[in-house]
Amino acid sequence: SALDGTTPTGSISLSEGTTPLGSCTLSGGSCTVSRSDLGAGAHPLTVRYAGDTYRTASTASGSVTVGQATTTTYLSAASASIVYGGSTRFSVSVANNDSAALPTGSVTLAAGGTQIGSCTLAGGACDITAGSTLASGSYAVVATFAGSTNFAGSASSAMTLTVSAGTSTTFGSSPTTR
Image (cartoon, rainbow, N blue to C red; front, side, top):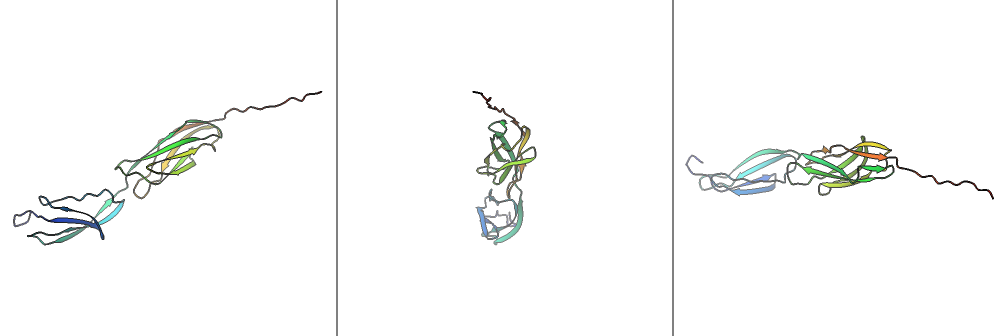
């Protein structure tokens, strides 16, 4: 309240540079402008008070820094066991731990530390069909989300993929004498 004992009235507007971000009407001397769409990074803001009967208009500037949203990467496979030369479909989803916004960006899939595929997130998820280049053995497979402007990177827990040698059948013939 002011020295005259009255509570400020009127409106407040918020902008970033020349871009209006919102406004509100004072109630009890305060109001709130909420935004959920500011990207990660520093945002120089300007608040303008329109003034009222007892107070003149005024402007104040400041800055707010928005951090990247944290993420969690999940990995599953249609099959945890394949035959040498075969492949399986790996499903990757990346969750935003901080809001409902869906992460965007790319994911790499590695088996035993060697990249075996990649995909681009759509709706926070993507699929990779891979495994055909792996030799027989057991592999720790990890999906890694690289992160993007607004989302921090993350890696899934390792899952085991087993590639078996499979079986081969040799058909032969014996020479016949007539």
